[in-house]
Image (cartoon, rainbow, N blue to C red; front, side, top):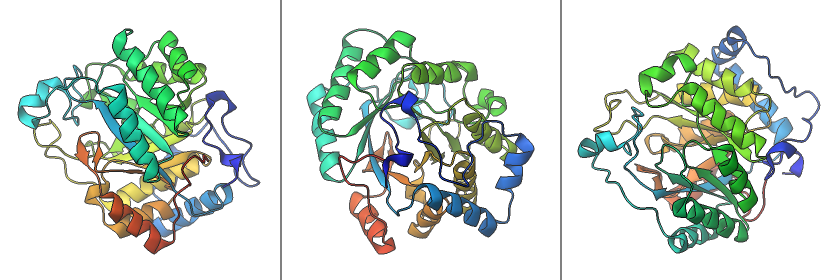
Amino acid sequence: MSDTASDSFHGHAHFASPPPGVVLRHDWTLPEVRALYDLPLLELIHKAQTVHRSVFQDNKVQLCSLLSIKTGGCPEDCGYCPQAARYHKDTGVPAEKLMSVESVLSAASQARSAGATRFCMGAAWREVKDGPQFDSVLEMVRGVRSLGMEACATLGMLSESQARRLREAGLSAYNHNLDTSAEHYGDIISTRTYQDRLDTLSRVRNAGISVCSGGIIGLGESIDDRCKLLLTLANQELHPESVPINALVAVKGTPLQEQKPVETVEMVRTIATARLLMPMSMVRLSAGRMQMSEEAQLLCMLAGANSLFFGEKLLTTGNPEYTQDMAMLEKAGIRPLEPGSSR
C-alpha cells in the first residue's frame, strides 16, 4: 500500500486526499446511515468492498498487538468490563501493579517478531495521573517507537498537557472508544459522561496524535444506537485514523454477562457501514474474534476491516492463537503488513 492512505504517525497530517470517486463527508444524517446499514447484505458488502479497494489497493492487513500494562482495579462502572474494581469479586480479575518498562518492551519486541506493526498498551485507569507511573508509560512509548513500531496507548481520560507529553514521547495513536451512542451510553456507564470522552478525543487530536476510536456492539443497543455511534465518529471534523469495531465478550460477573452473542451479519453490517462512512480509516476487527469462525472473520475483511488484533489476550478476554490467525490469512491469500512499515 502506498502512503496515500497512511495511518499517519502525526495526527494533523491525517490522510492524503482520497482517490477519485471517494468522498470524505462529515455531515451524515441518521436516516442516511441507517439506509446504508439496512441495505441488502450483499449489496452493502459490494459497496464497502468497492470503496475499500479504491483506497487500499492491496490485500494487506495490519497486525496489532495489545498488552494490558496495568490490569484491574479500575474505579469506573462500565457494564461490560471485568477490570472494574466493583465487579472483581465476581469476575476474578484482581488489581495489579503497572508492569515494568523492561517487561513491556520485551513483549513489544516479541510482538514485532511475530509480525505486529502496531503495539498498543492499555491501562485500567479512569484517567492519567501525572507522576512516576505516567513517566514510565512515556518511557514505554519511546521504547516501542525505537523498535520501529507504531505505539498506541489507551489510558483513560487525558489532560491537554498529558496529551502533549505523549506526543513528544512519540505516541503514534491514542485509543479512546465512544463505546455506543450518546443516548444509550448512560445505560452502560455512569461514572463519566459521553462529553468527557469527546473532550479526550479532541485533546488527543489537538496534540497532533492520531485518533483511534470506535465502539462495541452487543451492549443491548438498538440498530439506531449503532448507527448513531458511527455517525458521531464520521461527523467529527477529521475522521479517526483508526476505528476498532468490537463485539461484546459477555464476561461472567459483569452486569452484561447475560447478553446474547453478536451475530456475524450484525458485525459485518457495522464494519461495512463504518468503511462507507470513513473510507480512509483503518477499520480494526477487535474484541469478539474468539467467538467468530474463520469464514465470519474473512467476511468482515471483505466488508472493509483491514486490521486485526492478535495475540492470546485482548486485555482480559481471549483472542485466537497466533498460529491460527496466520494459517487463516495464508489460506485466504491475505498478507500482513511488513513489520516496520506503516499504512
